Image 1 (spheres, rainbow, N blue to C red):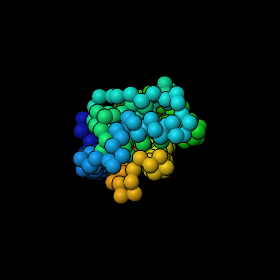
Image 2: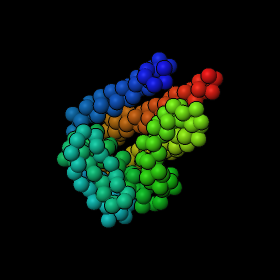
Image 3: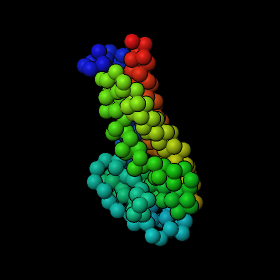
Image 4: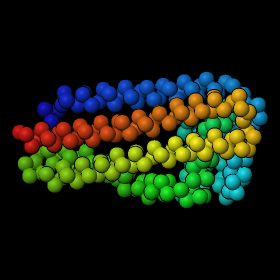
Length: 231
């Protein structure tokens, strides 16, 4: 059962799939809706991001275009804020919200926000660990005396779960900063705040979903180990 198809996997995989799909549909729906509504300020996402950065005394962060849909991100290694095609040149409410969110990460970096620093420090370890976790668990399951491989694999995946948990407050804090920055800079009108919040709240759901999916995957791995021991 372990070597081919494990029916118990569906018990964890189906909820994880549904959670992920729900989060993706919600964020894409909110972004699509508010991408059609032009902001009163007329500023593009790139212009809004620069305005927020300069208003916070940050002048060494570059704002660049990146291809793709909702591929927006802030790279603290090179101090580059990258905005996607639907944000960089768009003057919609959705674009302003996404751009301000990424600017919020730049402000976190500038102010040495501890959770962002911890998440950044974990990235190399988590990238390696998440790729090695399942192969190590599988090796451990295949061999009678493979408990050490299983334990290492579980530990590595626990770090990946911890990473998703740490990411959540980082993202929520960036969204909170985004709303405040847009209001303080006068980039959005009071009537536009609700739309920006809906876009950012929908985006936050993707990170909540990532936590739920990671925990479900960890529980599945633990179930494999428990069933091995029961046998």
